[in-house]
Structure formats: structure tokens, C-alpha cells
Image (cartoon, rainbow, N blue to C red; front, side, top):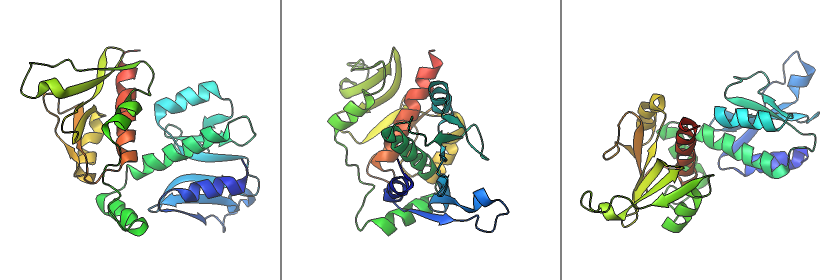
Amino acid sequence: MNVEDFREYCLSLKGAHDKLIFKNSNSEYDKDILVFFVAEKWFAFANIEVFDFCNLKCNPEESQELQAKYEEITPGYHMNKKHWISVGFNGKIPDTLIKDLVRKSYDLVVATLTIKERQDLNDSTSGGNSKCLKMNIEQFRDYCLSFEQTSEKMPFAGFFRNSKSILVFYVKNKIFCLLDIDSFDSITIKCDSSKIEELKENYSAISKPFNLSHKHWISIKFHEDMSDDEIKLMVENSYHLVAKSIR
């Protein structure tokens, strides 16, 4: 991947823009660092002259796995090393993986935006309602089952009214997501307890789960203020929380 391809991909993401913000730096290296933003928050940066690596936000658990697998991926340069990684451009990391990590970084940052920031982002890039769920139930099932060691089952027939239509997704033998396949209007997933209140403040789609701990689980209503990508990210986080608990 060259610098033009990298910049083009970063700017293809909704609402992304770039800027050389360190032009007055005393460091010659830092002067050429191009920062990519979404709603004024960084999601990537790289030196456009040397183009030796980029910095990206990353899920801490995935960060550890990537660093163990690739020596070209290291803790983020000049950033919080728990939440950022540096990815080397020496040809050993596939372009497809770099793009995937850029997209995940972008999604992580978008997930932290306020309701107003997300509305502004949405209004500036779309004339319609891009938050309306575009996935159908089969696409959602395929996504949940794309994770390692996952399965699905309908285990609640007869437990309560309409329980026979509850589809449950497992990693090994533990639940990470469930939904009603007849209505397909919401999902229930596990969530980091420290982030639940912040999510409720930022998204009207977040509500209390039915028949599960309000401290560790949330429900997400479709067709509100969460996009497909944001919902997928929340499902992925739920999967990793559960998978981590059984290792």
C-alpha cells in the first residue's frame, strides 16, 4: 500500500477528513504527519513523506493478539498504548488487513461520538435516513456466525410468551447475542458495564435487556440512531467479552 491508496481509503469513510496539524512542530518528522478525523476526533495518522507506519485505534484484546502475530504491529506511537497500535508499511502486513484495521479504528471512534455529532455526521453525508437498518435477518445471522466457535439455537420454547421465536447465538456454550426472529426489531448483547451509562446517554437505541442482568447486558433497538456498522461493532464486542470469559 502506498500513501495515496492509504489516504484514499481513509477519506472514503463517511465524514472523514484530513489535516496536517503539526506543521509548526520543531520535529521535522512530525511536520509531515497527516491526521484523519471523523467529527474532529482522530482515527488514524501517518507521516506522508516517510510513510513508514500508521497509528490506529484498536480494541485492547485484539491489539494484544495482533502484536503477538505480527512484529510490525506495536503499541501506538505517542498514544495511549492500550487503545492504539502502530502498523508498519513494510509490505508484510496485507493491504486488506490494514484497511480492516482502519475501518475498525474509524468505527471505534464513531461509537464514542455524541448524539449530536452523529446526527451532524449523518446529515452532512446523506439525504436520507442512513441509520435505518439495512441488514436482513439472514445477513445478521451470517455475521454472528462468522466468529470462531459460534453456534445458534432456539432453546426457550415454552418458557414464556413468544419465547419459541427467540434465537440465541453462542460462543462455545455461552450466550453473546439473542433476538426475536419474528419481529427482528432489536437484539440483546453483553456489554462492558463501565460503558453502559455512556451508551445510554449517546444512543436512544440502547435500552434495558429483558430477563438479563441490567449491569452486564443491553438491548439495541433497530431503526433508531445506530447504523449497521455500529450495531455490528457492538455485537463483536459482546462476542469478545464472552469469549474472553471462557478462556
